[in-house]
Structures are given as C-alpha cells and as structure tokens.
Image 1 (cartoon, rainbow, N blue to C red):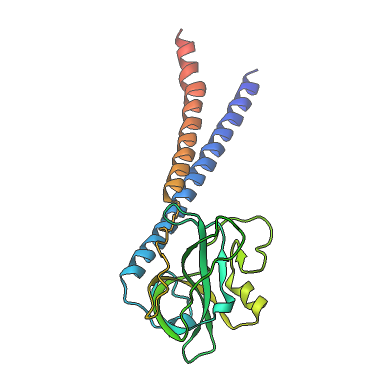
Image 2 (image 1 turned 90 degrees about the vertical axis):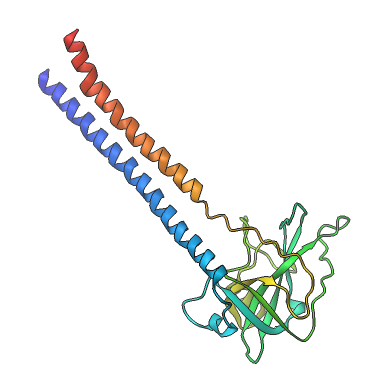
Length: 240
C-alpha cells in the first residue's frame, strides 16, 4: 500500500514539474515575442526620425523596412490596383496602389498612394482616380508589401482586389517590380490630394503580455495545487 502511494506521489510530482515547466516556458516565449515586437516598434520610431533615404537604397540589401525614403519617377497609372475594404477616418473605401517607375532606372516600386472612396450606387465599380503625369517626387515609408488584410483563398486579379503581393504582381504583369512597397506620406510636386492618414501598425504587444500573464498564472496555479494537495493538506489531516 505504501509503495503504491509512493508511486502515485511520484507521478503527481512529475506531472506537476512538467506542467509548471511547460506553462512557464510558454510564458517566457510570449515575453520573447513581445521583446521582438518592441524591437520592431523601436525600428519604426527610429525610421520616422531618420533622414529620408534616396531611392537607390531600395536596391540594396537588407531592405530598409520602416525607413523613410524619397522617390522620383513616373506613375504607371494603367496598372493601379485598389485594395478593397480599407476604411479611413470612419469612411469605407479603397487604398490606391500605383506602380512608380524610378527616374532613370527600369525598376518599379509599388506605392500605396492614399485612400479613395467607393461609389455607393455601384460598390464594385472602380472610382475615377487622378494620377499626375510626368515626373513626380514624393516621400514615404518602406514596407514589405501594401497594407494587408486577412483573406480566404486567392487574392484574385483585376483593378479591385483584397491584397496585393509585389512578387506575385511582378509575375502577373511581367514588370520589374521590386519586392517591397512604399506607403506614401508626403505629397508629390504634382499632388493628387489623396488622404494618407495611415493607421499606426498594431504590433500586438498587449496581446503577448496578456498571454504571458495567463501562462505564468497557470504555472502558479499548478504549483499551488500541488503544494496544497500533496504537502499542506496531508499534514493538516495528519494533525487532526
């Protein structure tokens, strides 16, 4: 009987140790993820304060994500894509993304130019979008791709679509599009007056801290239950 109790206690002890170790490790993993997001946030803030890079920086490695960049080139207006379901300031509409051929080069970069509303009478009709002709100059923030939303299935083709991947669009059009995007922040010398109140990237720091708290709380609960049921409670019953 004593041997059986000892084996049961050993099993409970091992289970408790594994439970505390696992939940504690998951908690630390969430804190590590939060630290990674903090580093990205610091990069965003530093990129906003740093001087704007020239367009040639887009051709270098590693890609200067989150950095300000100054571009000069010509719009390829007929290749404009409208990203659907993109509200701004409480109004529904599209994000306009137009390829820009860099001045003096063959390379093309996708520029998320600004927001445009949709036609309330014909929801799926692309709105008229004024695109300045000739050489324009503008500033923006480098991103991996135009702003993305969660989607089911393929992104589709056509002027209106849910998301736009630079590499996929390069294959689709045959154009030498760089594998990145620029979110325009400063209007060009021939501005189109599109709103550009881009939302601040939500890195989910609070989510990671919340998950970490939950895992650590679970680890503490497992430890507390073990101490109570295996150590404190038997002693109290023994004294009674």
